[in-house]
Image (cartoon, rainbow, N blue to C red; front, side, top):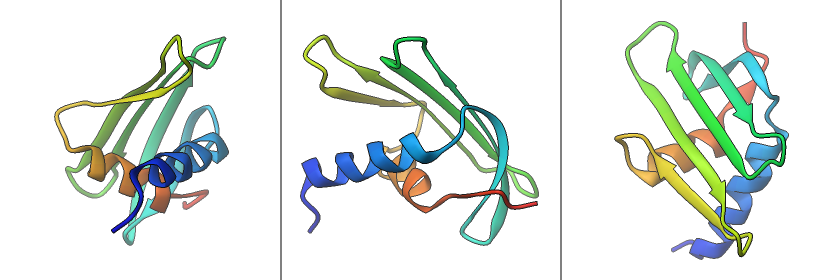
Length: 94
């Protein structure tokens, strides 16, 4: 089993590598349209992704608390789905 702290660190590193704004990416063999917005102080990150040839979506907010701890808030889906997506998505698919 994966250490939860290590998993969230991997998640944060993968998220930091993704560009702000709209881009296309590939995940599990499908093309996705992805939008990421970051607050000016980077204490809130919002992601919305939708499968372009399907009906799947991934959406969440990630907050940095006043203690600088990450607080992941998925939108009506599991945290594991969100984490798997961010760790697996490859930007730049057309």
